[in-house]
Image (cartoon, rainbow, N blue to C red; front, side):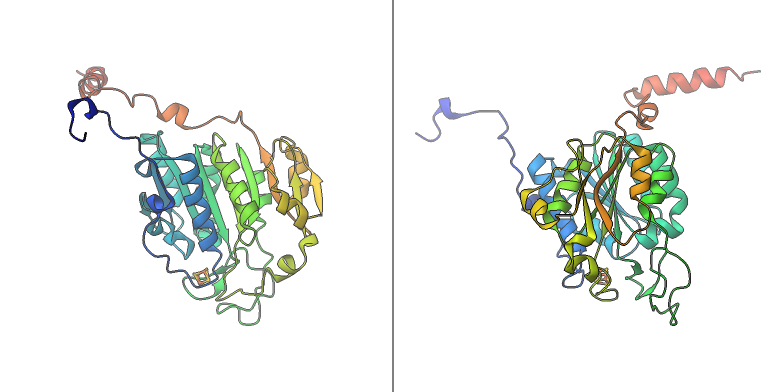
Length: 317
Ligand code: SF4
């Protein structure tokens, strides 16, 4: 009978998180924008891993993809242009128990944020960094970005972009202490999901270069890769991104690549007509900066005051 004393319990009911637990505001990206798929993939991973929403932080800079934190029902920080990584590092330094997802774009990360990009990767704090690369500044309506291909007609280069684009994966593989570098595409949700999931489980900064469609300004840019799956080279390995059977069937152009081989990873990242996707490089032994920033986090207020007093006493005259 309901209300009988034997049915009472002071135990909290076990929480189960559904997809809705992570869904924030209605995403206002354009219809067909690749950002929608990435958002769904992250929400699914959070659900599958049953991460309490209050333990998740989405951090971003400025740009279309940087609206990401608004669409997560978690903690979030929509920061300044190019400053997603310093904020994310700050979060991890004080709260290493939180799961940090960083959303940044090719303009945000590879231009104004390039200095932070280098050092964020070098700090190797445990977080998942997603570079949404649509080869254009979308939010500000079609200016040349650091990854725009030569000849792309934009509002800042009406006769076509002049300079060769930054090779994102090649760049990251050149940064000191890089510990996880992968590439995926927004239009294959299975590969996108598996790549982000593998990244999430990496202890350290996992950097994922996501080729992302911008239906408004670079709609045809990836058609060559989308219409001919042999133009993508699927990297496979037991220590790499697990290959879903449907993905393996679609992308028949495959290569076994050992992600511990940095020299081979750098060779694969060379510009080519065929674009590799999967895990280029992983080093689980790269030092993590939070190993150092964690010191003192458990100190009480009294301990901290005593430590400050001790330091000041050293300079007493
Ligand atoms: Fe997406 Fe491009 Fe629209 Fe921005 S402008 S929301 S990148 S489709």
